[in-house]
Amino acid sequence: SQKIEQNSEALNIQEGKTATLTCNYTNYSPAYLQWYRQDPGRGPVFLLLIRENEKEKRKERLKVTFDTTLKQSLFHITASQPADSATYLCAVTGGGNKLTFGTGTQLKVEL
Amino acid sequence: DVKVTQSSRYLVKRTGEKVFLECVQDMDHENMFWYRQDPGLGLRLIYFSYDVKMKEKGDIPEGYSVSREKKERFSLILESASTNQTSMYLCAGMRDRGSQPQHFGDGTRLSIL
Image 1 (cartoon, chains in turn brown, orange):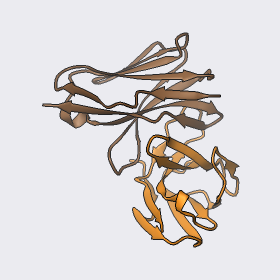
Image 2 (cartoon, one colour):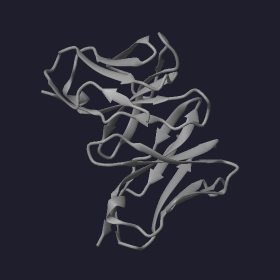
Image 3 (cartoon, chains in turn brown, orange):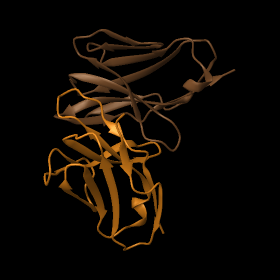
Image 4 (cartoon, chains in turn orange, yellow):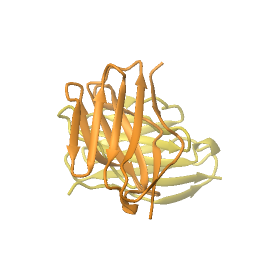
């Protein structure tokens, strides 16, 4: 069956360090993969989209990689700040316009 | 700036009631989606719509129905609410251009007593 896996354990890092979150998928061949941020009590907010023919995408302090051989995407936040603390969700195309989401990884950036 | 508005942030209903959750988008998006989000299970797609009066079942449609009479409005209906439908419900809109992001509302936290 199709599955998207994100580390369910919270990731705690120190301010200024680089946070790296992982998204693994099985039984998919997604044309693109998306990352969202979700704050408590709010809806997810879109951050970045990367296509299968792109190895890497950057936006300000964010970087996403997409390895279709490993079936994995890595999401990096450089120079992390306490304001980056949130849950980060990855999502892949499940067919047509549908997205299938992972369960998310909670990131805590400490002073 | 895009806007998806869900009618209620918090809602408490009783078992057996018919419940309506409303979602309105101001983006002229063709596609609209209803998800529920539960701890450990993530977002699961209930129903989606790609045009007015069109609907498609998602992964967990049982116990739900939807209505889309106008492009900007997508309603989720719990025909006879049950306690296992207590959850956070999220609505999203998306343009029909391929590889587009989804824009979410802030959710309705629904409790069925």
